[in-house]
Image (cartoon, rainbow, N blue to C red; front, top):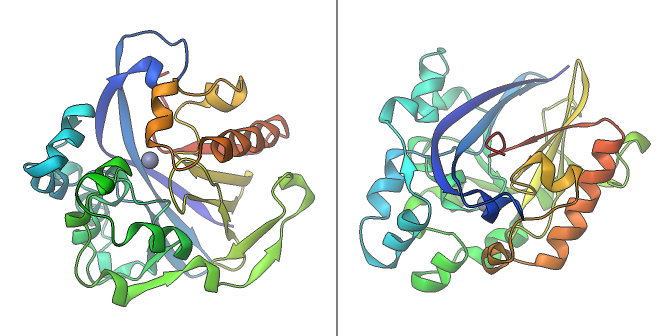
Length: 267
Ligand SMILES: [Zn+2]
Protein backbone atom coordinates (compact mmCIF):
# COMPACT_ATOMS: atom_id res chain seq x y z
CA UNK A 1 0.00 0.00 0.00
CA UNK A 2 1.14 3.53 -0.70
CA UNK A 3 2.18 5.93 2.02
CA UNK A 4 1.73 9.71 2.10
CA UNK A 5 3.94 11.95 4.24
CA UNK A 6 2.93 15.58 4.71
CA UNK A 7 5.36 18.51 4.79
CA UNK A 8 4.89 22.25 5.05
CA UNK A 9 7.31 24.48 3.17
CA UNK A 10 6.48 27.97 4.42
CA UNK A 11 3.15 29.73 4.39
CA UNK A 12 1.50 32.88 3.16
CA UNK A 13 -1.19 35.05 4.65
CA UNK A 14 -4.34 36.55 3.26
CA UNK A 15 -7.80 37.58 4.34
CA UNK A 16 -10.03 34.66 5.36
CA UNK A 17 -13.04 35.52 3.19
CA UNK A 18 -10.95 35.38 0.01
CA UNK A 19 -10.61 31.63 0.55
CA UNK A 20 -14.07 31.05 2.04
CA UNK A 21 -17.10 33.25 1.40
CA UNK A 22 -18.41 34.78 4.61
CA UNK A 23 -15.36 33.83 6.68
CA UNK A 24 -14.64 37.44 7.68
CA UNK A 25 -11.76 39.84 7.29
CA UNK A 26 -9.24 38.35 9.71
CA UNK A 27 -5.82 37.60 8.24
CA UNK A 28 -5.06 33.86 8.23
CA UNK A 29 -1.97 31.75 7.56
CA UNK A 30 -2.20 29.33 4.65
CA UNK A 31 0.49 26.62 4.82
CA UNK A 32 2.16 25.55 1.56
CA UNK A 33 2.00 21.77 1.80
CA UNK A 34 3.89 19.25 -0.19
CA UNK A 35 3.47 15.49 0.01
CA UNK A 36 5.89 12.61 -0.36
CA UNK A 37 4.17 9.63 -1.98
CA UNK A 38 5.78 6.22 -1.59
CA UNK A 39 4.18 3.54 -3.77
CA UNK A 40 5.37 0.40 -5.52
CA UNK A 41 9.15 0.70 -5.47
CA UNK A 42 9.21 4.43 -5.98
CA UNK A 43 8.95 7.82 -4.34
CA UNK A 44 7.39 10.94 -5.80
CA UNK A 45 7.11 14.44 -4.49
CA UNK A 46 3.78 16.23 -4.90
CA UNK A 47 4.50 19.97 -5.39
CA UNK A 48 7.31 21.90 -3.73
CA UNK A 49 5.69 24.58 -1.57
CA UNK A 50 7.75 27.75 -1.13
CA UNK A 51 11.52 28.01 -1.49
CA UNK A 52 14.03 30.88 -1.35
CA UNK A 53 13.71 31.10 -5.15
CA UNK A 54 10.25 32.63 -4.69
CA UNK A 55 11.78 35.54 -2.81
CA UNK A 56 14.46 35.99 -5.50
CA UNK A 57 11.98 35.81 -8.38
CA UNK A 58 9.45 38.28 -6.97
CA UNK A 59 11.79 41.10 -6.00
CA UNK A 60 11.32 43.08 -9.18
CA UNK A 61 8.99 43.80 -12.06
CA UNK A 62 5.30 42.97 -11.97
CA UNK A 63 5.97 39.94 -9.77
CA UNK A 64 6.45 42.24 -6.76
CA UNK A 65 2.64 42.38 -6.78
CA UNK A 66 2.51 38.60 -6.15
CA UNK A 67 4.42 38.86 -2.86
CA UNK A 68 2.37 41.91 -1.83
CA UNK A 69 -0.94 40.07 -2.37
CA UNK A 70 0.21 36.94 -0.54
CA UNK A 71 3.04 37.85 1.88
CA UNK A 72 5.25 34.79 2.31
CA UNK A 73 6.80 33.53 5.54
CA UNK A 74 9.61 31.15 4.80
CA UNK A 75 13.05 30.20 6.15
CA UNK A 76 15.58 28.26 4.08
CA UNK A 77 15.46 25.31 6.51
CA UNK A 78 11.79 24.89 5.54
CA UNK A 79 12.47 24.15 1.87
CA UNK A 80 11.21 20.72 0.92
CA UNK A 81 14.66 19.85 -0.43
CA UNK A 82 16.14 20.53 3.05
CA UNK A 83 13.36 18.69 4.85
CA UNK A 84 13.79 15.62 2.64
CA UNK A 85 17.55 15.79 3.13
CA UNK A 86 17.10 15.76 6.90
CA UNK A 87 15.24 12.46 6.41
CA UNK A 88 18.08 11.09 4.28
CA UNK A 89 16.26 11.56 0.96
CA UNK A 90 18.20 13.26 -1.82
CA UNK A 91 16.50 14.92 -4.79
CA UNK A 92 18.07 12.22 -6.96
CA UNK A 93 16.29 9.51 -4.93
CA UNK A 94 12.91 10.64 -6.25
CA UNK A 95 11.29 8.91 -9.21
CA UNK A 96 9.67 12.20 -10.03
CA UNK A 97 8.25 15.52 -8.94
CA UNK A 98 4.55 15.84 -9.76
CA UNK A 99 3.18 19.36 -10.17
CA UNK A 100 -0.51 19.82 -9.37
CA UNK A 101 -0.40 23.14 -11.26
CA UNK A 102 1.96 26.03 -11.93
CA UNK A 103 1.17 28.60 -9.25
CA UNK A 104 4.28 30.02 -7.59
CA UNK A 105 3.59 28.43 -4.20
CA UNK A 106 3.56 24.97 -5.82
CA UNK A 107 6.62 25.24 -8.08
CA UNK A 108 8.93 27.59 -6.13
CA UNK A 109 11.33 24.75 -5.24
CA UNK A 110 11.79 23.39 -8.80
CA UNK A 111 15.33 24.75 -8.96
CA UNK A 112 16.29 22.52 -6.01
CA UNK A 113 15.36 19.46 -8.10
CA UNK A 114 17.17 19.99 -11.39
CA UNK A 115 18.20 16.34 -11.60
CA UNK A 116 14.66 15.11 -11.04
CA UNK A 117 12.12 13.94 -13.55
CA UNK A 118 9.05 16.24 -13.70
CA UNK A 119 5.42 15.23 -14.28
CA UNK A 120 2.50 17.56 -15.02
CA UNK A 121 -0.53 18.14 -17.23
CA UNK A 122 0.54 18.61 -20.84
CA UNK A 123 -2.50 20.70 -21.75
CA UNK A 124 -1.88 22.90 -18.69
CA UNK A 125 1.80 23.39 -19.45
CA UNK A 126 1.01 24.24 -23.07
CA UNK A 127 -1.24 27.07 -21.86
CA UNK A 128 1.31 28.27 -19.31
CA UNK A 129 4.82 27.84 -20.75
CA UNK A 130 4.97 31.02 -22.82
CA UNK A 131 3.27 33.36 -20.36
CA UNK A 132 5.35 36.29 -19.20
CA UNK A 133 4.93 39.64 -17.50
CA UNK A 134 1.44 40.64 -16.47
CA UNK A 135 -0.28 37.75 -18.26
CA UNK A 136 1.89 35.32 -16.24
CA UNK A 137 1.20 37.20 -13.00
CA UNK A 138 -2.55 37.00 -13.65
CA UNK A 139 -2.20 33.20 -13.82
CA UNK A 140 -0.06 33.11 -10.65
CA UNK A 141 2.88 31.90 -12.75
CA UNK A 142 6.43 33.18 -12.17
CA UNK A 143 8.55 32.07 -15.17
CA UNK A 144 11.86 32.63 -13.33
CA UNK A 145 11.00 29.73 -10.98
CA UNK A 146 11.29 27.24 -13.84
CA UNK A 147 14.81 25.87 -14.40
CA UNK A 148 16.22 25.64 -17.95
CA UNK A 149 16.26 21.84 -17.78
CA UNK A 150 12.54 21.65 -17.00
CA UNK A 151 11.14 20.75 -20.40
CA UNK A 152 13.90 18.26 -21.21
CA UNK A 153 13.00 16.26 -18.06
CA UNK A 154 9.25 16.54 -18.36
CA UNK A 155 6.58 13.88 -18.92
CA UNK A 156 2.90 14.71 -19.36
CA UNK A 157 0.20 12.74 -17.58
CA UNK A 158 -1.67 12.47 -20.90
CA UNK A 159 1.06 10.05 -22.01
CA UNK A 160 0.25 7.61 -19.20
CA UNK A 161 -2.06 4.62 -19.48
CA UNK A 162 -5.70 5.43 -18.73
CA UNK A 163 -7.81 3.36 -16.34
CA UNK A 164 -11.41 3.32 -15.16
CA UNK A 165 -11.72 4.21 -11.49
CA UNK A 166 -13.49 2.01 -8.91
CA UNK A 167 -17.10 2.92 -8.20
CA UNK A 168 -16.25 4.15 -4.71
CA UNK A 169 -14.44 7.10 -6.32
CA UNK A 170 -17.50 8.31 -8.25
CA UNK A 171 -18.21 10.80 -9.69
CA UNK A 172 -14.61 10.48 -10.87
CA UNK A 173 -14.53 7.84 -13.58
CA UNK A 174 -11.16 7.83 -15.27
CA UNK A 175 -7.54 8.48 -14.40
CA UNK A 176 -3.95 8.25 -15.63
CA UNK A 177 -1.86 5.53 -13.97
CA UNK A 178 1.43 6.85 -12.58
CA UNK A 179 4.08 4.46 -14.02
CA UNK A 180 5.93 2.28 -11.45
CA UNK A 181 3.38 3.08 -8.73
CA UNK A 182 1.84 -0.40 -8.80
CA UNK A 183 -1.45 1.21 -9.79
CA UNK A 184 -1.60 2.87 -6.36
CA UNK A 185 -1.29 6.43 -7.68
CA UNK A 186 -3.90 7.53 -10.20
CA UNK A 187 -3.77 11.05 -11.57
CA UNK A 188 -6.99 12.92 -12.35
CA UNK A 189 -7.89 16.25 -13.86
CA UNK A 190 -9.42 18.68 -11.34
CA UNK A 191 -10.13 21.59 -13.65
CA UNK A 192 -11.02 25.14 -12.74
CA UNK A 193 -8.55 26.54 -10.23
CA UNK A 194 -5.67 26.87 -12.71
CA UNK A 195 -4.68 25.60 -16.15
CA UNK A 196 -3.73 21.94 -15.96
CA UNK A 197 -4.78 21.56 -12.33
CA UNK A 198 -4.60 17.87 -11.37
CA UNK A 199 -5.11 15.66 -8.34
CA UNK A 200 -3.90 12.20 -7.34
CA UNK A 201 -5.86 9.30 -5.89
CA UNK A 202 -3.44 7.36 -3.68
CA UNK A 203 -4.32 3.91 -2.35
CA UNK A 204 -3.17 3.81 1.28
CA UNK A 205 -3.74 1.38 4.15
CA UNK A 206 -6.72 3.54 5.14
CA UNK A 207 -8.23 3.42 1.66
CA UNK A 208 -8.15 5.91 -1.19
CA UNK A 209 -6.94 9.42 -0.44
CA UNK A 210 -7.29 12.28 -2.92
CA UNK A 211 -4.50 14.82 -3.03
CA UNK A 212 -6.64 17.67 -4.34
CA UNK A 213 -4.13 20.56 -4.24
CA UNK A 214 -6.05 23.84 -4.68
CA UNK A 215 -9.36 22.40 -5.86
CA UNK A 216 -10.46 23.89 -2.52
CA UNK A 217 -8.66 26.07 0.02
CA UNK A 218 -10.67 24.91 3.03
CA UNK A 219 -12.59 21.69 3.64
CA UNK A 220 -15.64 23.92 4.19
CA UNK A 221 -15.44 24.87 0.50
CA UNK A 222 -16.50 21.37 -0.52
CA UNK A 223 -18.28 20.16 2.65
CA UNK A 224 -20.66 23.14 2.64
CA UNK A 225 -20.35 23.88 -1.09
CA UNK A 226 -19.32 27.37 -0.01
CA UNK A 227 -16.74 28.70 -2.43
CA UNK A 228 -14.16 31.44 -2.11
CA UNK A 229 -15.14 35.10 -2.40
CA UNK A 230 -15.92 36.40 -5.87
CA UNK A 231 -12.60 38.22 -6.00
CA UNK A 232 -10.89 34.82 -6.20
CA UNK A 233 -12.59 34.26 -9.59
CA UNK A 234 -10.06 36.70 -11.04
CA UNK A 235 -7.22 34.20 -10.63
CA UNK A 236 -9.26 31.11 -11.52
CA UNK A 237 -8.72 29.57 -14.94
CA UNK A 238 -12.40 28.63 -15.25
CA UNK A 239 -14.78 29.40 -12.40
CA UNK A 240 -17.60 27.21 -13.80
CA UNK A 241 -15.25 24.23 -13.95
CA UNK A 242 -14.01 25.10 -10.44
CA UNK A 243 -17.51 24.75 -9.00
CA UNK A 244 -18.10 21.53 -10.94
CA UNK A 245 -14.90 20.12 -9.44
CA UNK A 246 -15.92 21.38 -5.98
CA UNK A 247 -19.20 19.51 -6.37
CA UNK A 248 -17.27 16.35 -7.25
CA UNK A 249 -15.20 16.74 -4.07
CA UNK A 250 -18.44 17.21 -2.13
CA UNK A 251 -19.74 13.86 -3.39
CA UNK A 252 -16.43 12.14 -2.72
CA UNK A 253 -16.40 13.49 0.83
CA UNK A 254 -19.96 12.23 1.37
CA UNK A 255 -18.68 8.79 0.34
CA UNK A 256 -16.00 9.12 3.08
CA UNK A 257 -13.01 9.32 0.75
CA UNK A 258 -10.30 11.34 2.47
CA UNK A 259 -9.27 14.58 0.74
CA UNK A 260 -5.99 16.37 1.40
CA UNK A 261 -5.67 19.99 0.22
CA UNK A 262 -2.51 22.04 -0.12
CA UNK A 263 -3.48 24.96 2.11
CA UNK A 264 -6.29 23.91 4.46
CA UNK A 265 -6.12 24.40 8.21
CA UNK A 266 -6.65 28.11 8.74
CA UNK A 267 -10.42 28.04 8.28
ZN1 LIG B 1 -3.04 27.50 -6.77
